[in-house]
Length: 317
Image 1 (cartoon, one colour):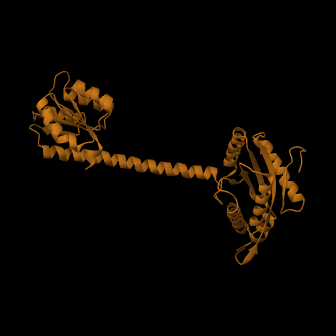
Image 2: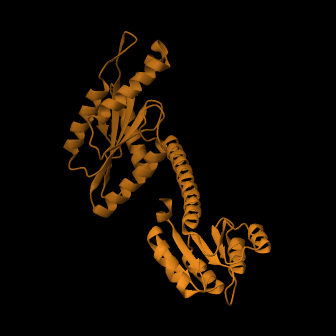
Image 3: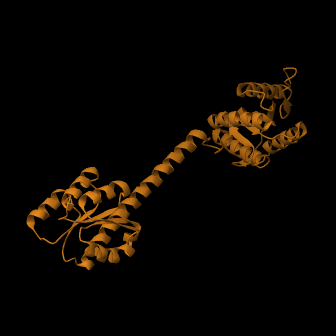
């Protein structure tokens, strides 16, 4: 039953009635609260925010109807059931005017009361479920928007925006942990020829293939991003040696040159790589990018399908 999911406040000045209703209702609800007049009930409401309220009308200090009016002014949707020994039209009209959710005449017919409470609880649950569904849709939309804003639509890898964030984090971590990191700039060779000869769909197929092949050669911790039309960046953290980076660069060049078949045509590109190093965080983002970019263009100038390191000591490759 939905009633088990909700808390309930019972406001009644007669102690015997209170104990009888406690025996009936306590096991049916999540938490059962008791108050013995309207003022005490209002204080319980403000502190505990019970999901459902049942109240007698005639009580000392503050009547149940007055308490209900105050609560409805604060939260019109809070379900309140009025209990009264008097089946009076005036009382009923007052209850309707403040949007009371149920009216039960004493002596209480427990079966009818439970039916009313279960209906109220089910309506509350429906609202909660609807809100959760709405929240899930909102969250899904936000995640989709985040994905679109931070990832390349064609290859699904991070874009330049996310790359810049990740590079800043990697430099900071390199400084904190006193280890080295490296930045690869990867640019496809003769990619324009593919687009010009076979069309942009062929070029897209090449890009997707290259990304898939590069991802198969790098570690899960390495960060690959698309930063331009046929330009990619790779952040490699916790570099153990320059020799390891050389091995990785050769693997990337080999994987990128894997041919694909597009509409019966064998298509193939190569790539050139420029590599910059961040030694224990002693570089900034722009410096690393400029160095890797410079080394990459030098690799292209030297005949393409190759890699070069930028040498910090001599300011060249």
